Image (cartoon, rainbow, N blue to C red; front, top):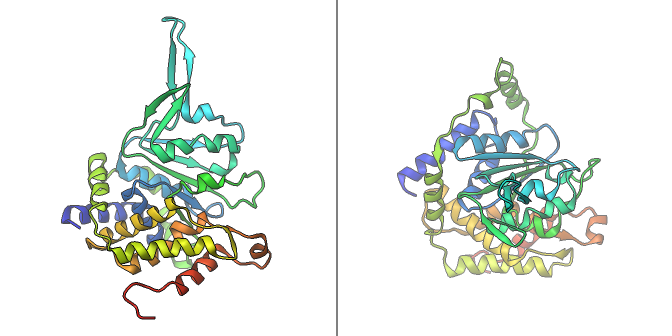
Length: 316
């Protein structure tokens, strides 16, 4: 990793730290998704800082920022835009939706209907919107930071499997320790929130340059085979009715490349793959009914797979 890239990464990390206390792993994962042109699902209980993390990252970038507060009455056209008759010209005119921004905060995405949730699928996969047969490209860089509360809370709708697969990775923040919470209380006890004074530390051009650098990280045949073997094992595991897709395999390798960049290397290690696997793969798994009845988790299944798949360079 070049010194310029290293400096940018640490500036971003330290800027978000001004708002988010003691959650460096979550911040790092969000930065990895940004470097990989990926989208993030931040899933946790209410009040732990999901929206704050997304907003802090967005405010740290000198990019356009938009927010959709999802509710049951939000329509797909609110997200993607719509065409309407211009009474002055007599022609149909396109009115862009909320997605036409570089950093989009989709807040509480599981509180809107599946139909509206699905309106983000083309946006997240192809960076474009098609309305009435016409395709409109979104600005670059483009990233969706979605938050959701666990689906067993009242008034929520589970995300479709196809959309879950479009999230590059999933982040869980968790509760702070007592010491961290004391720090949080100190920062938020003044007249203004720390988020209000957060300033951009990275431009859109610098983000695009860092994204290009990820593709330059070397991945050996052994590393690619390791990823493919892990993903194949998930598709055959008896406790899963759905394992990781080829999109998930690509995401895992890209995430490992980005982690290598953050670690100052230009090559992927097996440890990069193992570290990123839970965040990249677990939300793509669907447990079998029997596994759910037994209390088996997706992370538990992945842990078993990683334990059984031989690490490149290790002897059997």
